[in-house]
Length: 215
Image (tube, rainbow, N blue to C red; front, top):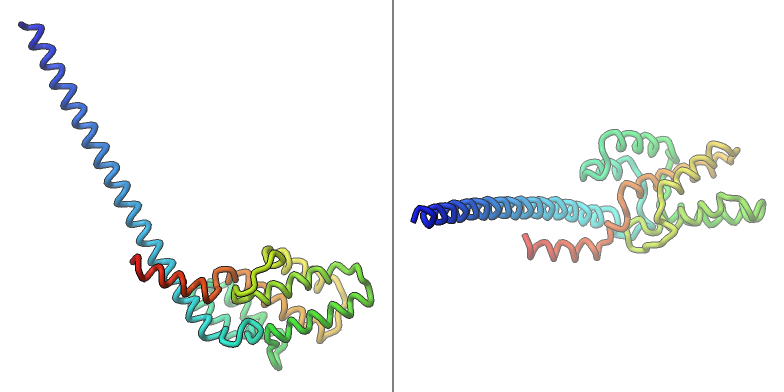
């Protein structure tokens, strides 16, 4: 009889231990699920806020397509307001915008035309000039400024900007051409912060529609 009692007590103890472990596991699982849901909700709110800002940016500056956009201090200030640029970036880019082509800012369409004419001039002088390839990539980037014309040539904006900067610094360039190249470089730096693939109006509208049903 004492042996039976001992077995019974051990069994009860094991059951209690098992119940305790199960309860702890369930609580941990619940806490993890709650944390995941909170993180998901925060992410949805964050992305929804960004998407709405992009939509406003499109409505204000991209009505005529990317070719009509001009990189002005006002445009840069709006990017800072919407959180696409931090204060230091905005100050640096705004200073560059004020220094380049002070009389009249070139639109991205005008810069694209400049790329064509300048590339043609380079090809006549030196068909193997490395800047020709850089300019072709730069044209793809500014053509996709609003995310409407994605291209593999526009995938590495930082490298294209660095190549253009090096060319400007290392070569004697006509004053007007230099101003245009500097404006182009400014546009590239803005594009790098905007991440054009995330700016497509269609993508933003679809995303907002999805979010409105899930929030």
